[in-house]
Length: 272
View (tube, one colour):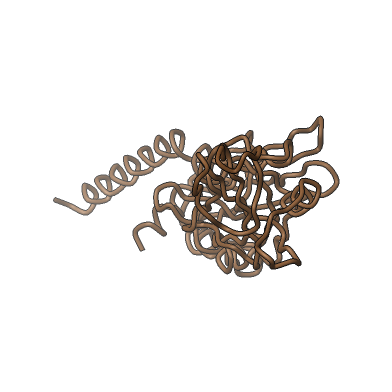
């Protein structure tokens, strides 16, 4: 095969490759990659207390990749109330401290009534949450015929005993420590102050991402926090740049047309 034939073959091979890349980009390009960065620009706000909340939280109308699946915040705009579901229980979010990764929550059913309406003990999803400070347990006892008493509450965690049922609810640390019965007014005050929990999602990964001008998001393929970037590689650990230009973009920009840079950079980083 002479040099002219080889040259023609190389040109056709390059043309075929570029055509495939264009088709690949049309199908998967901007809709798959750079849109992640653009669509995760929103923060969550509800009322005057819960404002500017970022990843791992997201609102119900935000794209799923913009927040962790266990951190969906719902705003009752009419009452300026924020709720979150944790381990099949609905909680009211009283405050969020993103610097310390803590939030104060209270069971929604005890914010609306003196006794829990959901006959479930309070529990957390310990894979993503933990108690952040000491709290007090309050036991609500139901159906205690031998005591000839209506439903009542007890400071501390205890089973139903001679009663038909019990529900344990954490709340603000009580100052009595006597483990005795609480009157209704005192009880409501204690449990409606909520209790403090921390979250384990994001952390250093998000800090590094934000420092590189990226936006934190959730990768459903790896089930981990990731970083969305405005330049290739659009999904990475960080969006490290060199003189304001993505390193991937800088390395390949002199060899391929600008329209192919997003998909080429992604292929480059996957294969490297």
